[in-house]
Length: 215
Image 1 (tube, one colour):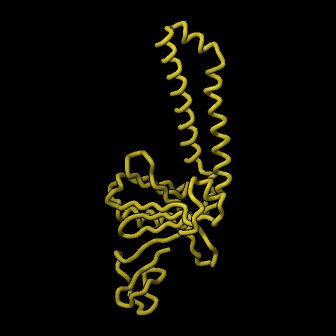
Image 2 (cartoon, helix red, strand yellow):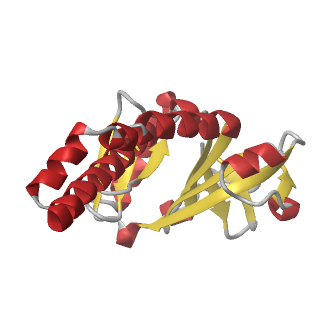
Image 3 (cartoon, rainbow, N blue to C red):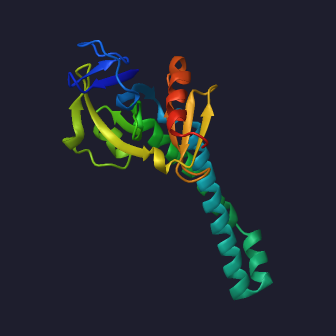
């Protein structure tokens, strides 16, 4: 939803008109804010990263093992390694890593993504219920220092916070069918994902494109 700040009344109102004086706010004083419930276990981008990392670790370990045996024992040593059980043990890391990843993502449970897009950039806060297992599953301490009440009166804990200024955005990718906008700080690497409410995708995309023209 669009929120506007009125400098005259010094208050923020939903929409682009001040609820006190009725004046339309300037574009530079407007921001778009929305919440998206999210389940990390179902995130395809996370699973792709996990699969790629596990495959890379297995391949590197296998090549390192073959290279060391070939260097120390010659071609016959590398052949003996290939005929043994060690390669199978190395690639057993893959299903074991998948199982551990599934367990960690499952224990994380549901979380709430709070997005703010303003004239400065895009901002994301990730919140979850203040439970020890959910903090530990995210490899974080269970400190209540960042706990606070949400508008519904529920106590929530912030898991992470991320900001990206418009001037740092190198490229933007719009995915209307997935209701996502990807902001890249480095081309094709580690984007900031804006998961948008489907009914508000066009409005949000127009807001982002205003500050990311030609990107």
